[in-house]
Length: 152
Image 1: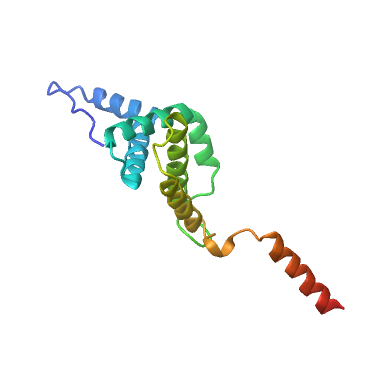
Image 2: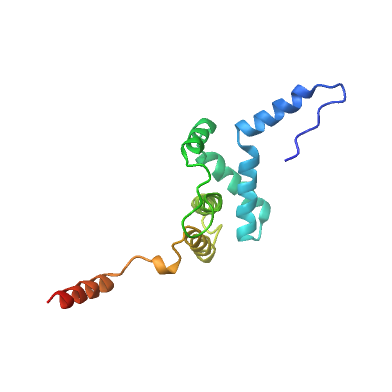
């Protein structure tokens, strides 16, 4: 992101201070997440949706220290087993969360179809596409019957 330039007088400390401030409050990250939410859903009123996504991000975001500890505790860039990278999965999970929070704040912000598509993409990234759907009771009963048949 573009931080304000230091005045010509040579006060380079101001620039470092601005960057530190933005990083401390995760401003660039939250702005990018909010913009991604708007782009993923392309609602009729982009600025209103952006505002809601930012509001949802600031109310639900963990304090920077917690986020830093969580990042440090996470395995270093371990790729996801089948789908997307950890970064892609996190970004899509954040998107889904932000969409749901925006809908909670203002019902109808995102349609069920938009949410379902975002959730489906998240599942796909996690490597769990449709193939890994939970088994129905009928499937479980059939498996049990098949197993008994083989044993007996």
